[in-house]
Length: 144
Image (cartoon, rainbow, N blue to C red; front, side, top):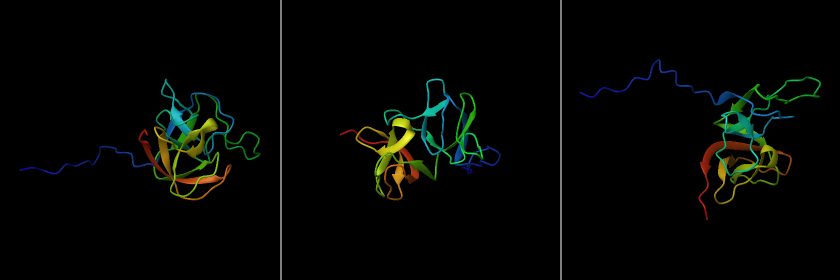
């Protein structure tokens, strides 16, 4: 007789967020695309050539009510990262609903091209500097 598996007590984490250590100082990490560095810490992604981890949450970094240091993270501090579901990232250029998104300079969102690692699919139209709403869906776009 084959019995069904029971996962009670296995501590499967259903949270859409994780917390990791920053691999570098970042002046404002909020809503930027992140990846792992060679030491296993998180850094701001500069392009789509390496696997992308997720997006820093809007409350990421220092929560400074004056706004002077809001979003600041020092190397070694915790960074809260959205790794699944729906989140927001700052667009570097115009992005239209349904387009595949990757990282570009400064961890901002850009259109994915052949061979790029994709962080997600845009759920709204946005112009440069705006907030692109993303369905996080990580994969590598097929090469041409």
